[in-house]
Image 1: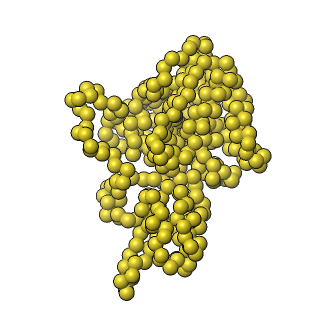
Image 2: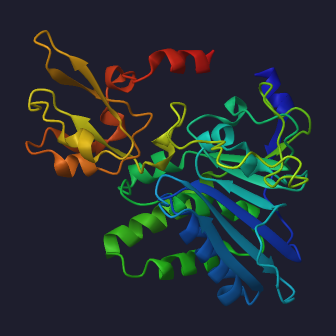
Image 3: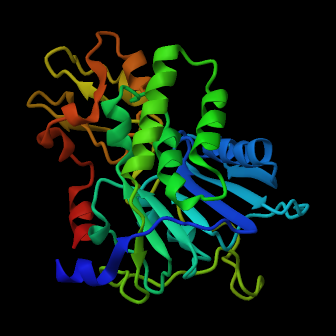
Length: 347
């Protein structure tokens, strides 16, 4: 507890508007970072009369892969000509805590003037950052749980994450941001639109930015941050054809891409046909040999499941059904394809 108190000071929202603002949103495809960036830009440009631009960067698959969304604003109306990625954000919004360990480059460019918002089930004192990470304030909110409580399991996390940004954006009043947020989702049914509005307001109220003291942020030692681009090009560029961060690594964790719903296996209905395994894009299913030598489905490794529900559609006997994540038992959660590698990583 003493370490926690020495690392964080009292809650402190931003009070004065800045002449220019750079916002970077880091997420996994399907979590709503691209939409959140659009809403922020529209609220600033159309609602407040600022000049600005917005664009996102993501791969061809998008869902389940890293997504970066960038917003640049000038509150004085200066024309913005820069259309490159933001290297030094004033506000960094991280849609899932696992990105900090799996993609530490998302923290690049943070300074003592940067505010950070993280979606996490952990309290702030349990989050670990690479050595040398700097920031002005840290805001932690459990966006998924907040969305689930109001029936938004199938929706993105942008509603709660936008609300959590409100105390850190004096340049855009909450009423203006909320107005453009509702306009963006104007085609939704009234009940769903009202649920999104409730989540947005509650997130804005629950968000408590806390000042961070420099050099006391990391709870454990990790590798220092490295630049996203090679410093010398030819001198330190990787050898051609080498996949530095392979997507099929056994250490990958696709849980960040889920929206709160996962497939659940009913073992009494399953007759081990294997159709689910045929359509699964990430090979989540664990099998074993029965006493007669036949293949038998044990269950799902949720480390690799990104919640696409293709297996649910393919199952001929409805032995796989979509359920909220909190309905998955601990025994099923602890079923892993590579338990020895997972134990070694946790060490």
